[in-house]
Amino acid sequence: MPNPKRRHSQQRSAKRRTHYKASETTLSTDATTGEIHVRHRAHVSEGKLYYKGKVVAEKAPLKA
Image 1 (cartoon, helix red, strand yellow):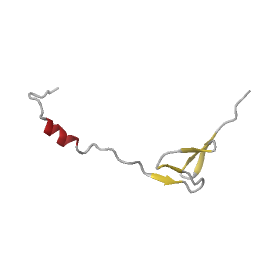
Image 2 (tube, rainbow, N blue to C red; image 1 turned 90 degrees about the vertical axis):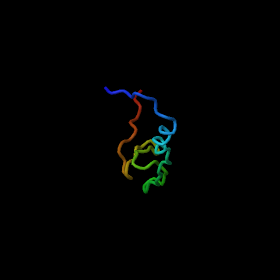
Image 3 (cartoon, helix red, strand yellow; image 1 turned 135 degrees about the vertical axis):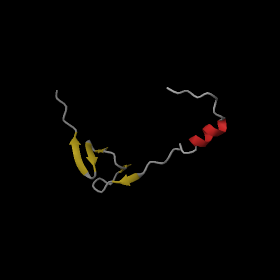
Image 4 (cartoon, one colour; image 1 turned 135 degrees about the horizontal axis):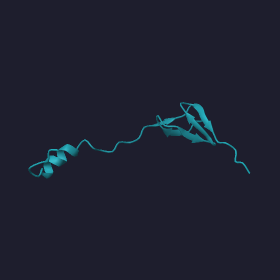
């Protein structure tokens, strides 16, 4: 593996890191439940797991 022969300057590192910035997450409102959630992620509403407005999974009842 090649290794750098000399140290990179702070300015060079800063130039490379200018593109690494945090961005806000995009939020959407679900058409069925009306809840606000992160886009392209499943979300829980009233014990049910929703994705793209459809129920994907329901919470199973607890056994005694």
